[in-house]
Length: 79
Image (tube, rainbow, N blue to C red; front, side, top):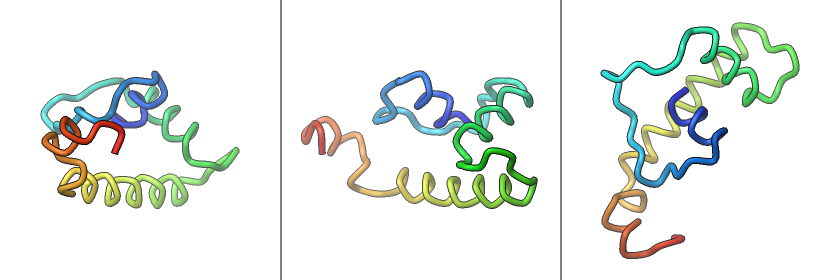
């Protein structure tokens, strides 16, 4: 939700890192945001669950990637 809500507001995601200690938004806002990005007009709970698990997996890999590190971002702008 934290990534998607920032993306929706056109915020820069390059320097953002998920912090599970900082809870943001309400359950309703989270669900609405997930439904906006899920790609289905009326997703089931299973579809939302699969979407969030896949997105979470990809975002974790991205956060660990050397290509997404602050050093690379600062020295290779736009990379």
